[in-house]
Image 1 (cartoon, helix red, strand yellow):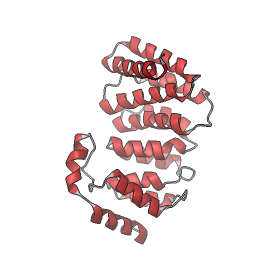
Image 2 (cartoon, helix red, strand yellow):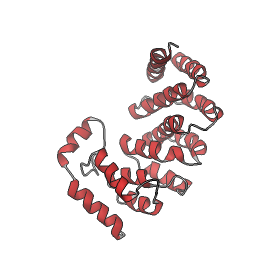
Image 3 (cartoon, helix red, strand yellow):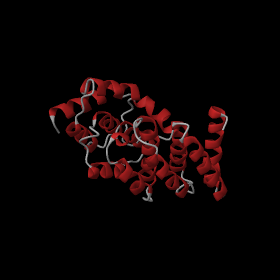
Length: 226
């Protein structure tokens, strides 16, 4: 371990507050490798470690290898979306055991890489809960952050959302729903397609599909009167 990485881990251990773990667990966070740092504390370390727009992929990979929850969240914040490789993205998704680290990677890093349109269908096809969640969390993040992208890639993912709407695992169905809602809210052109997708999902009739569709359609109605 480099001196910089070692120093960060020592700082995290010094800031650790294990009284936070019970609250994290109540929100479904896997605390088995957690020190008990809050997200604001991790973000503050990220700001000092990589100020401005600076990124450090080498340090991020070293932090990830520690297996510590907070170090992996920090890794997602300082990793370079233009330097991370496809194989590293796959390896990180296979390591995921908790929704919070998953979403940090997806919405702070993966959705900014040039590989997302290849990775989303690949990860969605995985039977592993958090790999599949990573697909749809990345899609949800991309719908918000990739403002300059055309509509077509998002339209092309709607069949994927329909395909996996059957998955009743909580962390998967919530991510599928999140992706559908964010695509619908992206712009007025995508909204009708997202509504039509939700209607087709509702017609599937499974418990998960009905929930995903009802929640998405309710938000579209409240926000847009759709």
